[in-house]
Every structure is written in C-alpha cells, then in structure tokens.
Image (cartoon, rainbow, N blue to C red; front, top):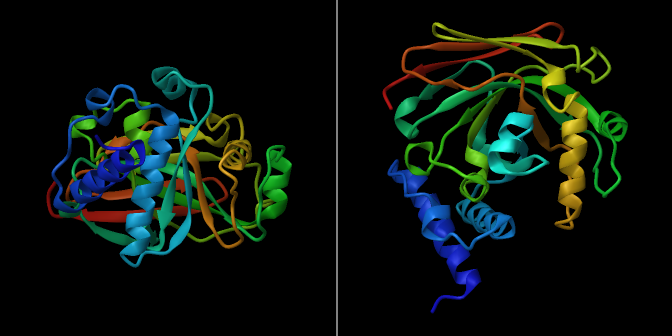
Length: 263
C-alpha cells in the first residue's frame, strides 16, 4: 500500500505529465475523496519540486480564490495560492502558441514586485505596500490539468492553483495610484470584462497580506525580487486562437499578448 507521501508524489507526477502531454486527468478529489487541503498543498509542493528539478527557477507566487463567490464555491473563507517559475513569467507583448495548453482562460490582475522579504502571521496591507518595489499590470493565463475544469478545492490547489503563466507590463511605484480604486478593462477578442482593484478582497495589498499570513503556516514567506499576482479583477475569459488580449488600467498602463495555433 502506498504511503501518503508516495501518493502525493504520484499525483504530482501525473499532473506534471498531463501539462506536458496536454492530456488532462480525472479529478483528484473524486479518485481520492479523503485528501484534504493539506494534502493538496503537499501535492503542489511535489509538483514544484519537479519543475525546479527540470531547471526552472522559482520566481514568485499567485493568489487564487480571492472573491467571495469562488471561496463559497470551494467552501473556504480565504484565498489559495500557487507558485510561479521563471518559465511562467513573460514580458508584455508575448506571443503564445495555444498548442501548449489544454483549455486556457485569461484574467487581468495587479502584480507586486518585492523590494524586501516579507513574512509572518500578522502582516498587514500597509506592510505589503512598504515592502513593494513596484506594481505592474498583468495577465494570468489559467489552464487546468484536470478534465473539463471539473475542479474542487483539492484539485485546483494540487494543480498549482490552475496557473499556467503570467504576462507582465512595466511597473510603477506602489504609491503612484490608489490600487483599490484602480480600474481595469480586459479585452480578449470580442469579450470585454471590467473591474476595480477593490474586487480583490477590498484592496490588492490586502490579498497579498492574506497570502503572507497563510504562508506563515508553512514556515515561509515572500522573498525580495519575487513577483506576486494578487488576484483577478474580473471573471476569466476563454483564451482563443488569433486574438489580441489587452488589460488596460487607469494609472498602471496596459499589458497585452497575442495568440496563435489551436487548443
């Protein structure tokens, strides 16, 4: 019989291969209903280890489930998180071959780049802003290695919070704008989504502070130089071939990508 640790490793390897072969797997939560959130993060940790062993370098973190609607769906009262590697972070104007994804979606977000390490169970939004070097407009591409996006909390957390990559624009000083009032318009082909920074737990820095407090339970935090995606300002849009996607912000400027190929 496999130990729990062995199961975590097996599931991580399964998800890792699913992403590379574009062959999604059945929901983890349905096949292993006894697994809980701690197990899901253990699988994610093994998945991160596989990425780093392949030569990737840890570049930051992403926050998911920042809206009350998503938290209610997952039965939680706090965000979840995943990791970003250097292979997952691209510059403004990137061209994406959709042949590398399974069923991609895209969101507009505000990203934070850190000047200082930040950790601890009492970190506040003010602490986040004080430790931030710059804030940046960002697009996050989501993709699920779980069949047909049939995800519960265990599934998405184990699958690195359903993250695929991020495209980031030029940064500005964190005090250049009121991030809660900052408005965004996302255009993806014919689809348009709009939202404000306040949609992310009232303020994007509060979302990041919540992440730091969660990380404290894992004995870790955010390191200087790392990038953190603070959560989507509006609902995700399906990412389709032959599109230009742009997120335009009031003071943060804009960030865009184009797509080619087919999913």
